[in-house]
Image 1: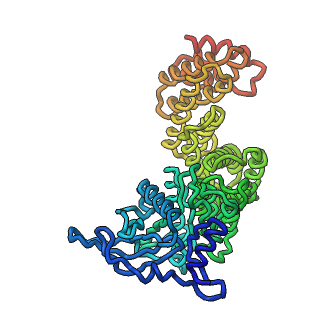
Image 2: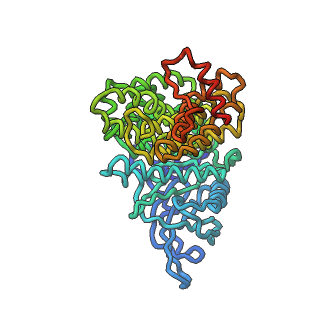
Length: 534
């Protein structure tokens, strides 16, 4: 059957405007309609038509050159096919209006438009000298191919932000230029989201249209997600990458299981490039542990994996506890990973390594990694009060590990002071929010004790040590109502005050305390109360 007859037949039988030229039903090659292909207008508007660049089911695209002499310019001129009539003209007009909304570096922009002498509408669009994205990716590393695809996906996300669904995403409609810039083309069947036009509601490209689109639904966000998934599959080819395969499957799944937006597909691809967990994998603790190792395969993580798989065990335990939170966003997962890892490194691993000989270098590396995680957690605006309190405790532990304790440490006093200041600042903010939160008492008391010790043994300023210690005791007392709890929280701070009083030759008021003297604690506290108040 002749191609024009096939087009008319398809129009009558199904209401579909094809986005590819019709083919013969006798097994022959596609035949362009002679009435359009052979009759090339010499000029449309200010542009002289040079040659045919390509053609689809709705129109023919010509290379056009500016002909009014004002300046040199090449454009792609799209002219509707004669036989499509008013329904095709309406779709063509819709494309022109929607293209006018698109201003994005990865979308071919609208330049001009008008009506030919025979009444057919035409568009002048940015001329993109490039090749289809699947061909452009041949021979490239997988990450580069994904990078090209991300440009097109972000352009689609922009279009959705303008309430425009493209409706015909496929490799042929994404061209890559010589400087590796991807351009999304052909909004010929695009529609405003939620306002599909009846004149071309079933226009689609077989193989790239979603099942609901084939069934008669208009272009939509989920339809574009499906088409992007099929396009991604064409770009990565026969790659054996499991995560990319999972992303393609998620993008092309049923509506209920498909990515709910292009943004979620983009985030998964960005996670893949950064070696972070991919949501489409639905992986558990072992998967997250593997991704964690991939991001830090050198240095600390390699050493940690050698220590009886402690990090793997910690991640498994923590992720099992958080299975109910799998539906969180990627950002929430990143935050949870940072919190979990910092807590494990600072409170579990360093304590174990402290009693192992020959681990100083490894402890230094672990402390550096834990420091970075603590800084990220402290800067997070969405951290709960419990997380921030945990971060403050982590800074206090880092203070002791770095160099502010009588036990073996890394000898980095400057880092210790930085961590102590960070802990005090976070505790101060928490006290402002909840002055009587009893969980603050112990870390506030520990921070006061560490600062008192630094002023006494580091700066040799006994008077300042006494003042700092007394202020710390008063702060703890303002948080707690129970006298016994106050004494426990202020125990180490009071010892530091007693040592400082000895330095000031006030032995009559100073009492040295040893933990073994448990029976005398009540009397000791009574004497220290008098020394602190004085």
